[in-house]
Amino acid sequence: MKQLALKEGNIVIVGQFDKSFENKDYEVHFNTETGVEVLKGKDGKDPFKTELPLLFDVGIMGYCLNSCPFCYQGNKTEPHMTLENFKIIIDQVKHHTNQVALGGRGDPNLHPQFKEIVEYSRNNGVVPNYTTSGINLTSEQIEISKLCGAVAVSQIFSEQNIKIKVRRKKNGRTNL
Ligand code: SF4
Image (cartoon, rainbow, N blue to C red; front, side, top):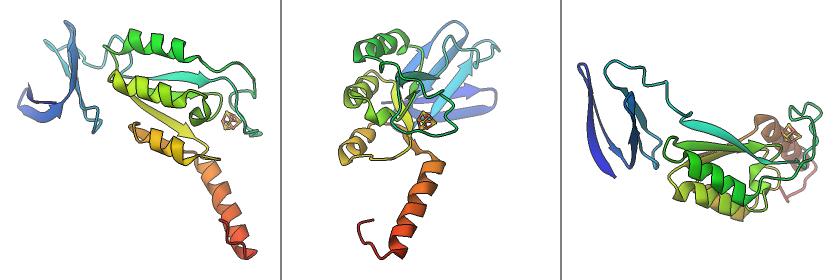
């Protein structure tokens, strides 16, 4: 982690960063722990015209165990992405991007190599994030998720879970 003072006109941004990359048009500085990201154009260039998105999506899931009637993924079934292919993607983009959103057709935490995927991404300086239904989320998956920058639980499933819990409580059940 190094401290940088980045000057743009009359503004100076001072921060701690552990990942930096640049080309002739821009420079990018990122803190993989806090998620703070600073982009700076060179010679008046637009810093947002980066070579690759600084956060990109990778669909690691080929099928989903949930059966939402509104499924925007078409309820198709295909193989999950292999760990080897995921590694190839990360190796190709890690010097130009900072974060990866794990997704695809289903809950990324149910990928058979979820742990290896999250660890490989984090160990290569690309912070993993993902969204899940939260259904049957295990303690082990929660532990692995601590390597992620952010984990979101879909509101619709949260609301369903809350309703189920409330219903169970009304029925006097204690195994919530
Ligand atoms: S959780 Fe997502 S991918 Fe799975 S069925 Fe529902 S909408 Fe489709």
